[in-house]
Image 1 (tube, helix red, strand yellow):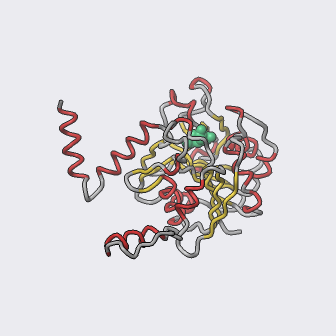
Image 2: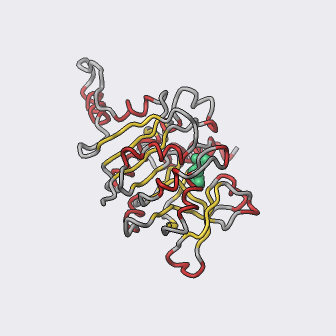
Image 3: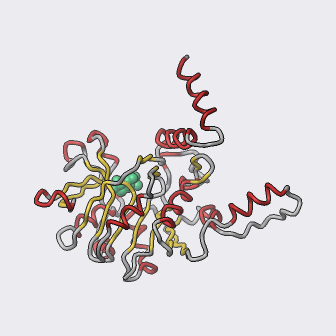
Length: 289
Ligand code: G1P
């Protein structure tokens, strides 16, 4: 069974970013000139995924509209440059990519969102990407993980070392000590207190799953935050199917958080060939005061 399906859970309330996210999905917030969801979609395309499953809230139609290529605009009066720009942005998805949209109409959590995608995932392995975890890397993190992925009965979660005092924001994992090199998980806990955290390795929003995770999700009851937690299903799966941690190469920005979002915008803008230098000069003047 081929790994070509990927789930984009995009129905979250974006409560950390209110009021900006009252009518605009957090995944549509821009880093420089592209919405977060487009970075996630481009990472998935680059990793070879071709079946995209968006688990969306009913109100978040702008995400679907962003990837539709039917600009209902009369562009006949526009300048040549503007027409070119619109034509370029009109088709984001290559022709070999297909999209399904599933509605999650209750905010019951990440695990619930993934379970809703079951009718499209069917018996296949699949990946999951959380668009608000933006990762700046030479090689996309999903691509790095696909290269690590070995067989249909194992799963991989991406991790990074974090300051343990921040463990309440992450799924925290620990690694089996008998085979540290393979980074096989022996525990995972959703958002533990620092003193209960099994290590300093926190999960970041990239996953590859064997299909069995769906069975475990079906048996998962409400956990942290009164939501169906993906982390709890992974934990149940550990004794039957191997799950590996993958420490990715790249810098991750938590763009669901205001400060993380601002940092990402500054870093991406500093790299811009058009105004990166000018921004650097501006920031210097602000810092010297
Ligand atoms: C989710 C997961 C958590 C993971 C995090 C990464 O939490 O539940 O295990 O560490 O994403 O961003 P959320 O940030 O959606 O609350």
